[in-house]
Length: 218
Ligand SMILES: *Cc1c(COP(=O)(O)O)cnc(C)c1O
Image (tube, rainbow, N blue to C red; front, side, top):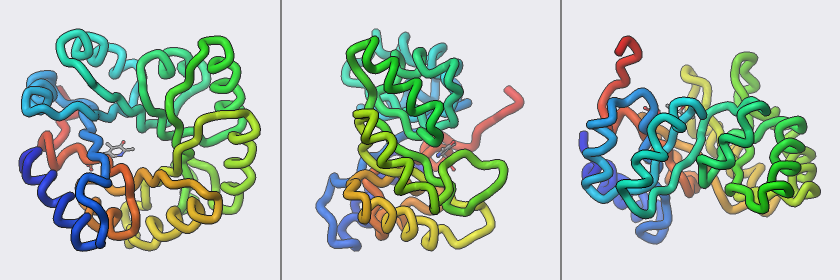
């Protein structure tokens, strides 16, 4: 598939859901992709990208930022506190705030640095052992904790369990966001972004459908 096909599918999904065209931000997830593929998408004019590892993002994006104006980088993977400073220097948006220790570190660094990226709180909607994110039952409390720290929380993010119907998870995330007065919803990937848009996604994170399959052996 191509960038333009994904964009038209997003527009169609927005229309079908009775939402304004352009209300959903497409994050092109470039992790593991060779630089040529990423550059091809930059040359098509796209500027919003996602990476899940700080180290990999640090090796790729400062160089692209020198060549292309207006890049917006989203860090969508779990974040270790010892990488928080580097993440805040690199990224415009961080999607996986999921525990008090990280929230406290981000707040302290924001004071010190005088700025903070926009933040999403990751919710582990499937309560999966191996997955990052605050449990649904702890979400309201954690959102309040982040707000009390003056963190710029824009919304919530989730990654549904692979073997479950994603719409249930998207609906749960939307419900938690609504009752906390949060407007941002980062949900939906290559296989389910249209479903996510129908359920209110404001940010979809699409990788392989744009760039092709990731080659982890390279
Ligand atoms: C890799 C990744 C994506 C993109 O996945 P695709 O299935 O390739 O679209 C989205 N969100 C997160 C958090 C990811 O790590």
